[in-house]
Image 1 (tube, rainbow, N blue to C red):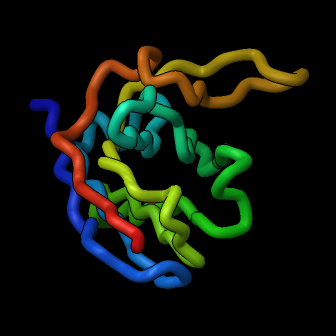
Image 2 (cartoon, rainbow, N blue to C red; image 1 turned 180 degrees about the vertical axis):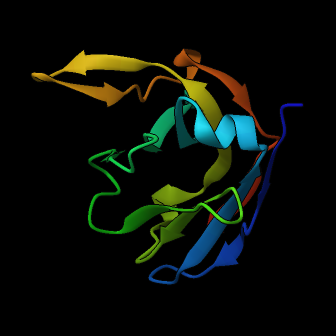
Length: 129
């Protein structure tokens, strides 16, 4: 049974922090890439951060140094710690799973393209003012 349940969104002032959580079924957690995507009104969905089964991560340039992706293996949960939030981070954030790996820059990495992921949750809203 595929299940991705996000939580942790909310409204914060610029410079603040939020931690998003994504509880996943064991199968999703143990297989394939997982990641967070976001979509702001009128914009395309973009990949924020991805993590492979070995723990290797990729981040969008816009969030490097501010966002941190991590996993809690005991809880089958993916976390996105978001610090120094900016108004441009305002979006609906989605957890995604069962993503593909691509050959990028001489190595294999998780795709940050939304269409390369087979499952995603309902989303959690993040608003930064």
